[in-house]
Length: 146
Image 1 (spheres, rainbow, N blue to C red):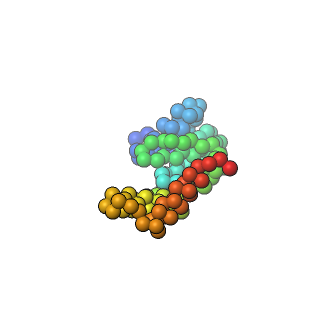
Image 2 (cartoon, rainbow, N blue to C red):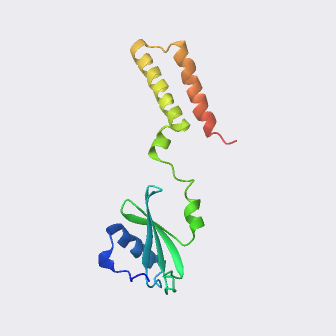
Image 3 (cartoon, rainbow, N blue to C red):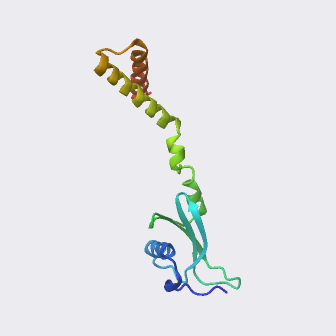
């Protein structure tokens, strides 16, 4: 049988998870943190169970609490809810090397080069005018409704 949850034996994030679950479900009794999954969606996922223990030590209900940066942003009752948020998450590196970020960076470089050419020479050479035109067409065209 699993022993009762003692608040003084919990770590900081576990306490946050328990507090978040109790705030969401005040009727939760006999809480137990049975699994911790670190580095889940840029946070830590705590799997908790509560209710009356059966002969095998299991409890009636299982809940999930996702702690990000020392706070409890989400309490889940169903695994499907947790899995539904997986495609939404992208790491910082994948955001930086995404095609949109690279296009934005190249666009800024082309616009900056055109400004520098105009400020130093009084005109922009043909290749940079074409590139600037393409950048403006791309971004304005992207913003138009389809």
